[in-house]
Image (tube, rainbow over all chains, first blue to last red; front, side, top):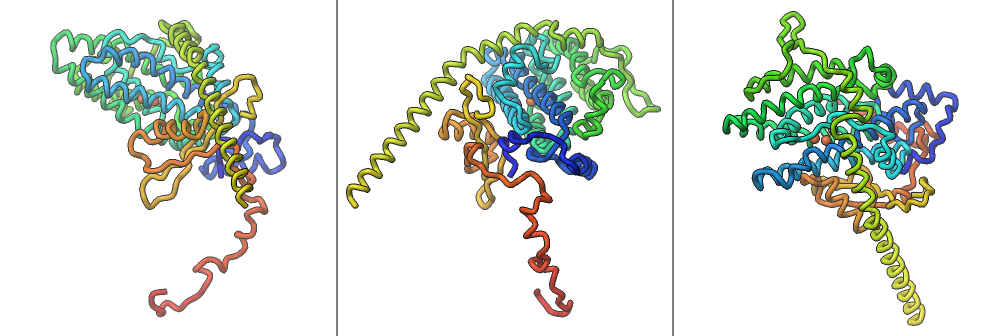
Length: 337
Length: 100
Ligand SMILES: [Fe+2]
Ligand SMILES: [Fe+2]
């Protein structure tokens, strides 16, 4: 049985043969499971990646969450609610996977709100209009799908299984966004302008979601060798562009890249270079909403502390009461005998 | 959790098992934190069965699960490795014997 608890007792010292066994498992394309021996670097890389991924899902609730109370219809409100709830779920599946590696959930939360662990740069941009909700579903969840589908085959079992669950849910996210945009595009000129404006603002940050270009991605090689990562950042970015351009055409919006054009020879779209200086600024804390996102996460955590404590106190009281009842019962049975 | 050993007083960890539909076994789907069993069940419902993924849920405190050692090649599993006669293919039966 591989449980979340299982990994905690692992010391991780390399006894002879363990590294070979680990390498053989990876080479055979089999999964590493929580109680298996694994190199410390593999464990550390996974904890960092899964935690960042979990934090992104949790922080990712905020930009769209802002629109739940302002959604234009009950239908849109219910959809948005369900979507944001899914993102919370994704965060929890991933924290659960990180815990199988010996990480501590409360510790990960602390690292997030102290700014010691990162999350996806995309969630540091503001959602200015309701069209942003549609564009996030279409582009941001679309990019997430591109990133996440290959992770369903990542070498660490609990991470791969969490990704399978997540990918099943992401398709709804992307489709509700695209449908929302189609509806707006059938509306007034003002609505169409809103959609185009949102696309203009979100396109480049969406391309940045795949991470820095391959020649500037220092951790990629090890992750590829361990089969944590299956495709390079640039490969996935290209895949996303190729998928998205026809969708943009169908929708009737222009992607804000003058260099974007079909390359017959390559069989792919050529496209411009994202502003990597902006990416570095935003990921290191200096984006439009970083401070606000973290402040809100911290407030939710701190304002919820009394609830967590009260629930524990209640549980302890119930357990004590149940214990007394059992004692009384056995005392009665003893007297009757 | 015992592993934190801090003053934080975290909710304990539970493992979650879901029966996808009648006729199937409960299957391990992941874990969650909850203050007690009742809360673990309702969290498990919200977290792991938002789209009819289950008709029945078990939760159990992770610390109550006993597990075999991590190594598949451990002698623990040896008793099953060398008993080929437990498999139907061990027995040679002529092709013309029907339904066997
Ligand atoms: Fe998600
Ligand atoms: Fe999503």
